Length: 489
Image (cartoon, rainbow, N blue to C red; front, side, top):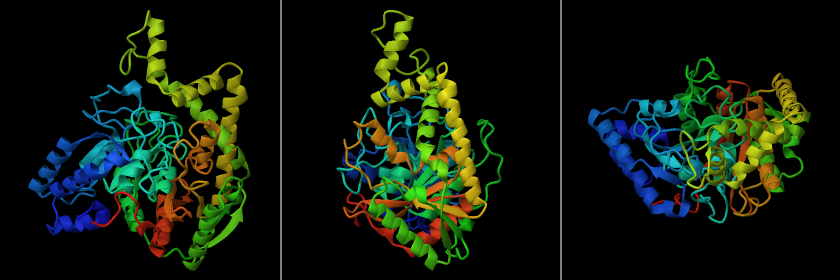
């Protein structure tokens, strides 16, 4: 029996009927990890003792009524977990073995009796689109091991796609949930900025970062988001918005739904098979009773440039705290204090992180602040205005999640500019703070998954989920299984 065969709702019913136990569910997760993770390389740290102990406690107390009771999940390794190593996939934090507190999302999952199976791999400090910048290992795509799983939440996506856990948490600064979800055939949600607490998330770009779930189905995704969403006094950017029931919003009836399709999302650089998958999806939405129009969001052309200026500037500031003094890597080769700062950061950070820190520092220095950083912030406002104008007439915005299917290892890592274009379709939603979801939408000629991106109005995750759920129920893309981990037992 494999976790891959079930949804969270099905497990919930089985627990209440005594057809399965929490301890058996934990055992299934670790058995699958032992079976496939030497190939997939999704996990950096396992929480076997803690998860099994919690499972036994849940069974002993017959405590199956909570929303994620006994459900095995995993957490991206830039979200802190008390007493469990948190590395951000960087040598800088390789020895950060005992964080003193749990992130708010970690606490919320524990309060709903979820089983935290372990911490999963990522691009170093969430800087990358392929999980190739991890200091420790290269996670592979379960659909084809020659291809990347996406990034920076590549370990999060691969762990779910290979059946090791039923959900994971990832983080999305410019597409780092949606792009790996698309590459691995999953549902990945970047919530509205401020909906989910960032307390306990190691910051990359604080005005862009958001935590969100990756799952195999829309319903599972909505359930996890219900648990982790909500106001947090520890996060000054956390919204006071009342959290509705996302599960109650799921409906196959989307008659009258108005869809905008920006022509900029289907322009140069988007492969023909990706464009075809979007056209097929639009035909399905029409059959379901929705209508769509092509629109123009003219400032999207500047989104990628604005994003990298803002994100790298914020990263330069966020990562200044890693100096070898209080925590993290400290060089043994330093001659004096200043040299210790230099050597610790030189040894601790990888090439991509160094590149972004340098770019961000330059952007913030002297006249460059006005010429580049402030100008990028103005462009960000123009992009937000474009979205607002579209949402005055339409319910959702639809397009591809990525320009292509998953690319091969080493195909883009040596050309940073080409790698950055992987995010060209996802960064606009981060700049505007909008909810955006990737849902499986077909396969490439090579058999790799393709994702459809659905963007909603601020705090209107309900409509995004409703549209994705109706589309999912009308198609079979999510039922196909990958090469590794998805096969029937």
